[in-house]
Image 1 (cartoon, rainbow, N blue to C red):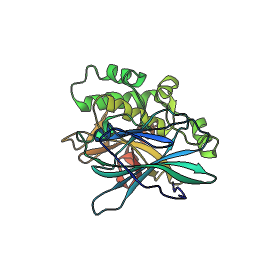
Image 2 (cartoon, rainbow, N blue to C red):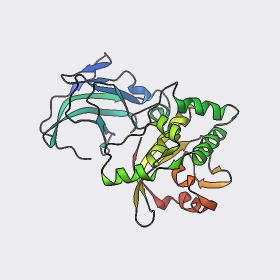
Image 3 (cartoon, rainbow, N blue to C red):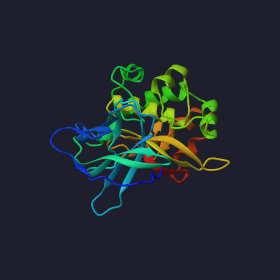
Image 4 (spheres, rainbow, N blue to C red):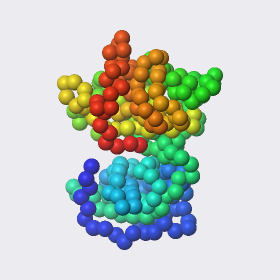
Length: 287
């Protein structure tokens, strides 16, 4: 998403206080070293709002993520998932068909623990301590000894319980539904969802069990043509082959790809080979 900018206000440097307040928005940086920030509009507005996180790695190319921000004055949580270092956090407001920046805060992030952004809630993986997803994960993992046993239990539950929602997928494809964000409890209550819902639920349940999980957005080489898709990557230290119910889904180390959406329709294992091949997946964004 490209935002057309009318002008750029002078940056507001992050001071010692955690709450950075602008004329129209507030940015809470108290948890930046835990991998996230909170942002809200200060007044209710019907104007469209956007939030950009712009990461500047030393000697590298900027990495930017653009998000919707609600105009209801309600706090939303956003990841700082690009790594340690300097970020510019920018709030934009619509002006006609373009966007104007209304607040900029510069911060320097140092994660408090490894994989910090992928262990906490965020806008795309939105859950709370007492949510249905967290309680279900606790129940599924109560007898698990290792992290891999937890992963297998949660993955099996999602694959065998959630079915693909073709109606919702059609509405999003047609433009009838825009700006869609998963509601994790709804996915559990209805036992239906699109790939975004599968991946958000899986990430939330794993994170609640202190297992690092990414929600990945990108392209898959699916027939009849490549499609935009969501899947997950999980992190298990010192693990190579990832196997779920004797089906190989990834061979490697560190982050391992898991595609619960495709696996849920994996009749007779027909999709196992597809999921296991790196060339079938092209990553665009990670959350």
